[in-house]
Length: 416
Image 1 (cartoon, rainbow, N blue to C red):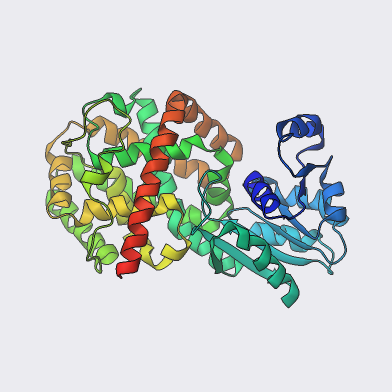
Image 2 (image 1 turned 90 degrees about the horizontal axis):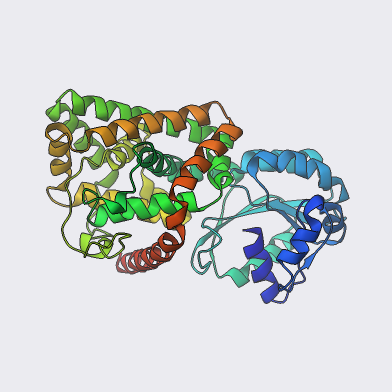
C-alpha cells in the first residue's frame, strides 16, 4: 500500500520520498529505479523534510518504528499511518511525536492491486488544524476514493465487524484444504458458483502478505472476541451435524438468517454469475450440494455477536462485499439453506472436510488469542506455500470476479 500511495501521489504531481530499512537501501533503490519518487536512506531523512509522513509498516512494528524516527519529524508536519488497527497506531504516534505535529491517519479498505476509484478510504483526524485537514483532503483526492471520516475507536469497531470473522473463515478454509492435501479445483466435489467464490476468496487472502491479516486480528481486541465466536459457532454447528440434531440446527440457522438478512429484497449474486469464475477445467453448469459449514458459521457468529453487516457497507472492503454476497445467496435463495442443513446431517461426503475445517478454525482462534505473530506467520506461510503455484491464475480470475461483483453492488445501490 505504501508503493500504491507513492505512485499515485507522484502521478498527481506531488513530490514523494520514501524509504525501507537502511540495510536494504541499495536493494530498494534498484527495485524502484523506474519510478518517479525518490528513495532516501532512512526514516530520519524522510521525516526531516516531509510535510506529510505516512508510516506504512506492519502493525506489530508501528510502536518501535515511530519511536525510532518520530523525533526527526519536521516542525509543523502532519503524521499518520496505514495500519488496520488504529488504537495502537495512534498511541504510538502520541507517545513519540512532538506536540507541534498534527496526527491524521489513513486506511484504504482494499488491497494494493485494487483500483482505488470508488473504494472506501477512512481518514482518522486525531489532532490537527483545519488547514491540515484541507491539505489531506486535497492530497488524497487523486485516489478518487470514497472518503469516510471516523474516530480511531469507530474505525477499529467497524473493521473488526466487517473483516475479523470473514478472514478467519477463509484462512481456515485454506488450512483445511492443505491438511487433507486437496486442491479443491481438481475435485468434482467442489463445483458450482458458491464453491468458485469460496476458492477464489481463500486464495486471494493467501496471495497477500501474512501481516495484512495478522495486524487486524491480533492488535484489535474486538477481533479476538469475534474470531473466538466464529470458532465456537463452527464447533457448535458441527456438533449438531454429527449428532443428527437437524431440527435444532435448522432453528438456530433460521433465527440467524432472520437477524442478519431480514431486510433483503434483492440478491446481490446468483449462481449463473459465480460459476463463470472457476479455476478448474470443468465447463460451467451444475453444482455439488455441500453443508457449507464455513458460511453457515459466519452468519451464526454475526447473530451471536449482534452484528448487522449491512450497517458498515460504506466501510467494506471488496472482499467483504463478496463474503456478504455469497452468504446472502446461500441463506436467501429459496430452499438452499434447508438443502445445506439436510446435507450437513444426512450426507457424510463432506464430513472429513468439515472436521478439518473445525480444527483449523480452532487453531486460528488460538493463535490470535495468544497474540503470537511468529506462529501466525508460520501457519499462514505454510498454507500459502501449498497454494502458491495457482496464485497467478487465481489473481486474474479473482480480479474479474471482484470487478463483476462490485459493478452489481453499484447497480443495486443505485436502485435502492
